[in-house]
Image (cartoon, rainbow over all chains, first blue to last red; front, side):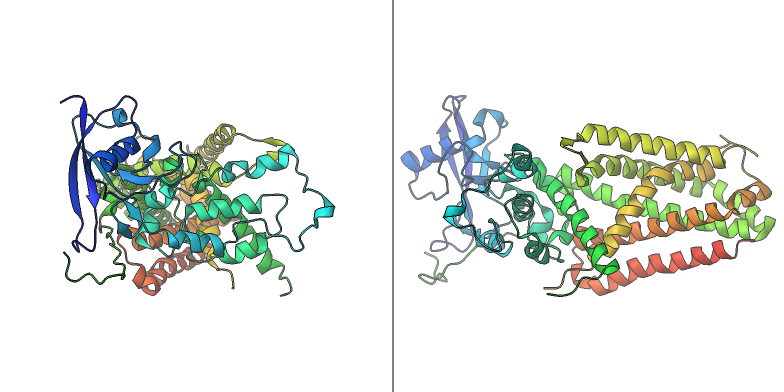
Length: 248
Length: 137
Length: 116
């Protein structure tokens, strides 16, 4: 049957069984279908109990990250025809996260880390409305723009062997997002962020495997952000050792 | 029904990472190979220390060192180390531009230029070594 | 929250990695492989000691060898943590890696200082 595709889908329903199972579905190979289209077809026509996350279906919301044939991908951005034709397509939850149900992983860890690193504009004093907007030149924007492209899809966490071995590692996206704000001319929070990041479970767990940058669908290059930050943190450390500053 | 399941008590399923995770995926194997080149770096340091020892303890010690160095096992070991060292150098030079942001005013020096700079530095260092330690002077 | 002191080791690792990448391939090949394979004439004892004796050369070798050792120590420590999942032995591993590097560095300094 050349016009249908075999999908092997990871199922985990704790109220039914303590261990996960794999369900097999024969899905029609629609024209220009993504993996997400196949999953939607399964849910709509074959097994309505299949649970998974998705939203924008165009690669900007970061909801539909899953492991397909062993690779962390956005299912809305992966053509069925790009996968080996003769083999079943294996879809499982993003590796590295505990599975709540079926294809849904628990990403609370990431959300907590985003908060820890203050992934927002930090000002010592907020400008009042009457003070007008914060002005920023195109050059200033270019300093952090690449890191602002992160859609929090967590493919990088799934690809990072360090995060999978040591979940306390703060992780690639959080560091890239911290850099997005550190390098933003409107922000004044870099000192606080460095307290959080220059820790053993922060940037110093990273050994520059580089897989995070390989899988990132938005070309954020978290690996590059982390190495740059290591250099910045080291220079800061040197300064604090050679020219000790007073403690606040 | 799963009789161990308690209603409203979530039971997350945790998947384990295998011990030899780095054999399961080619990019991870490349990564571990790259990291293991540190052994070649350490080995070269030891070879240099041995040379310093031999050259500082008179001609007989130096001759014994030369003989040892020419033994088959040591030559093979050193060739393996040299290949690993080359792998270290190539991966190091390619990754170094990622850690550096070189800006001249508004202009950000592209990675490719930085890489050329890395290779030029390597060529210069090699030339220095060959000039100083090569030949009989 | 006090910031980590890891930068100390990371800077040695980075500096060592750079020096090693630039100088060690040529040194290993020229001093140890090429003579053994007959590609170049091996240096005589007098020639080699004369080349190693000048103070700038000894200083350079001290820096190169010490930083290469600490490069190995730092990188190998993390390879053991991640590759063999031995992070729970962090005390023992750190001692072996950095301690080993430090011990060999002291030996190097001694050999270079007392070089005849």
